[in-house]
Length: 223
Image (cartoon, rainbow, N blue to C red):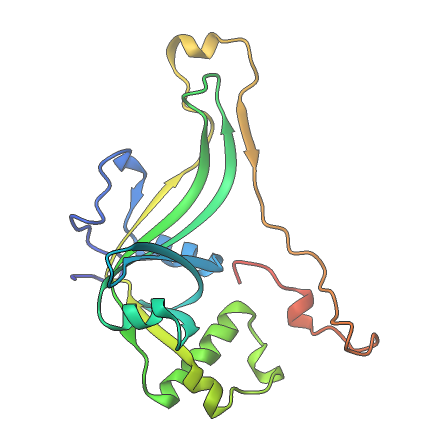
């Protein structure tokens, strides 16, 4: 799929047709949403013809998204066979309360990626990918923990999906009421939504005086 340094070219599958003014195809916006999110949803049709949507952890590395799961997972085995997959990530920024029930909405940012997943099979690349996933979740964590054993690496499935066919859909701002609806006697506006990361809670199996790492104390997204 043709890409350049700044944009992903829209395709028939990723071109927005309804509310197309909300469509964005630049990589900076795509990457920003992916880097802020924690969970993606994988949509695909498995071998028996059942449509499935599976939530899973992911991380973006350059022009690729890596997803992680169990090697015994039916999802991972199916996607490893080269079926088409849709990767979806959504961030909700606010509840939009309009003057009419019809115009109620959300302020949001969402990314859709279409493509086929490639299994990461080389043991060294799999170890690197597991490190990247760990660091993508909490930067600085990998050096503090025990590295995966050979059996743990073997039990892990890792798939790579290129960001070659993708689009962003987003909404921001106040309600879209117009005309006579603006005269309706009721409050209208936006309830902002913000993800709050609370202070870390130490595992009770640790000594209570064990210091909390600085990267945990300062944790937030986007990194």
